[in-house]
Image (cartoon, rainbow, N blue to C red; front, side, top):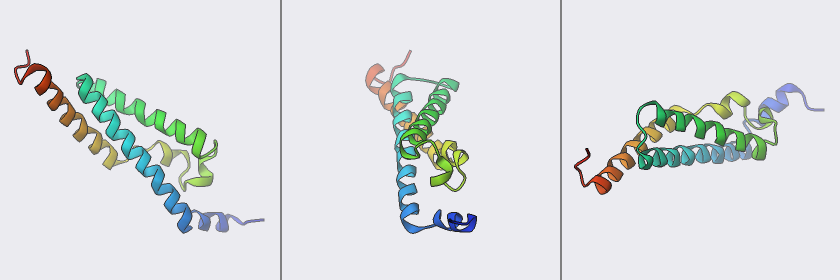
Length: 115
């Protein structure tokens, strides 16, 4: 039977780290997509951040149910906390893509003359 130190060492095992990197990529792409949707829909203020929160929760739930099979502590060192944490880079990516798509969609829809 594996001791607690063995299971903690397994979390830093190279194949596990590579697998967790793919989860980070999925969360990053999810925040990019949510930013694009918020910008195209023209969401402003808290409505856009509510969409971001909803995308973080839905992405975390899908990863929890499918990839982690209901046991995130087995795959992630901090467990559920690490899974739900959006990360600072994902928040900034969301805001960047949100403002980009908001500006571009308003430029093409209203021709730069928004009323």
